[in-house]
Amino acid sequence: QVQLVESGGGLVQPGGSLRLSCAASGFTLDYYAIGWFRQAPGKEREGVSCISASDGTTYYADSVKGRFTISRDNAENAVVLQMNSLKPEDTAVYYCAAGPHVGWSSWYKRGRYDYWGQGTQVTVSS
Image 1 (cartoon, helix red, strand yellow):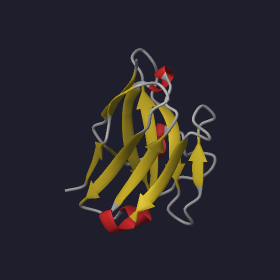
Image 2 (tube, one colour):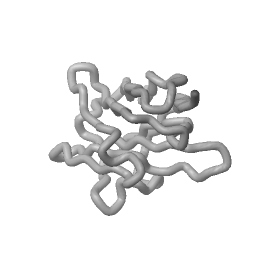
Image 3 (cartoon, one colour):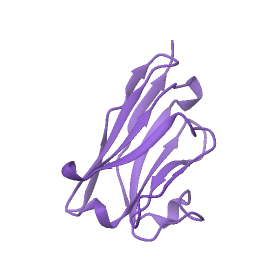
């Protein structure tokens, strides 16, 4: 059974850090681009970051550049999103997704991903 499971969400104060993990079962993440998306209440789901399948190229939304870092943990068949300098506007449910054909022009498009996790809540508040 193909499954993606996010973990690592929680409540953090502004300026703090969280480390989200996206673990896969039933398939190997190496062959897929992995994207992180988020959805705040009343807003559309938006792309946050992506790491390509081919050469590990990374992509970030302008709103998180310089604060978030995406990387692969091949030993754990997982992808990690390290989030630093968190802001209240980063509050959202964070989802990871896997897609075989995702590149620089499509990484932020939800329709390019075949598999989705259930999401993990991130709340940034004092």
